[in-house]
Amino acid sequence: MDLGLEQLGRSSLDVAMCFIGTLIPSLTVHRWCSEQQRAAAGTARQRWREVASPVGTLRALLPPPVSAGWEPRMDRIPDVGEDTRAILAALGRDDGEIRRLILDGIVSKPASAEG
Image 1 (cartoon, rainbow, N blue to C red):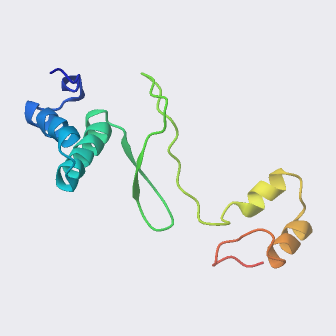
Image 2 (spheres, rainbow, N blue to C red; image 1 turned 45 degrees about the horizontal axis):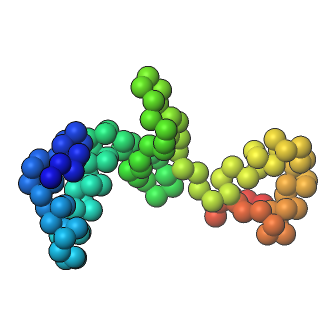
């Protein structure tokens, strides 16, 4: 039976194990297939990227769509409230109003920032 998975870079054993997993509902087989599918999706298709975050570097999958010659932005992940002042200023709020919104707890700020 041709499952059409060979083009994903899977070996015959991988295909057989996933096919067996569809016939025999076994947590171990399904877990193994899921790990193989995640590896194939991220590695064979080269979809994993590293992005900076407040807790360190994280691995993230590229968002769809995939297009040859175009790489989507994978910017840093900001901390909660890190960009609050810049966003509110871009929306036309003045410094006093931004400070009041932060002090009143209406919008967030990073734990290390002052009101």
